[in-house]
Image (cartoon, rainbow, N blue to C red; front, side):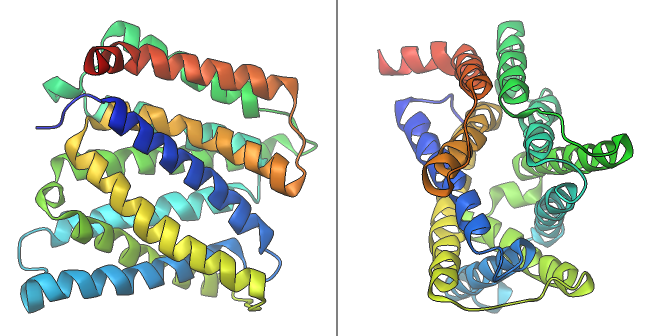
Length: 297
């Protein structure tokens, strides 16, 4: 039985948002040496070796004989599609548009889980979702000198990526994989993503790899911290707390991404971003604030 968020869960998700926000800087900093899609394939391959060894040592050769294979592969496929589509969206539209439409995922997660009594949101909480999403739009949406067709194509790809992310949370909540150990859940996702992203990088000619010290450091960070430690924590949280509430807190991730970009890469921050950030925080508090107050009282 998943429970509402408490102060500990909120703090852990906040830490994850900070870490995931920083990963955008890690990807961008070495993109000249390794294409982002290949960086993702490498980090997921490293994580797959780690989690594959862990699960094999615990379960042996019957590690996939527990009935989770079908829903686990589906989960991994949706996980991979999210990353591929988000990357392709950036080729057609702006990073701001991509962020806006990718982070529609909490809405699709909440919609998909409405038939589960404890996951249902009240009208006020749906209002909180609307406020938070409006904040994302205000903070990131901007116009660029691109054709309308290009923008629509990119925006649609990013929106489908958000749908894929949202549906993957529903599969995790309702599929057979939902009863598996956290390590096996992560294994299905990172192993499938490593294969599909490597195949996509090869098919699209994004295989350039120059291993400078900075590139190696970035790949080690992405593998150990992002693909292993943060995913272990995230999927542990998904097994113990309400999925829809956790997803709403994840809306803070792109805000941290922009902050780190400004601090470490010199990216500018506009007044509009500050207003959008306040709206996101307000929306998150509307959805979770009462529950957090009750838990910490």
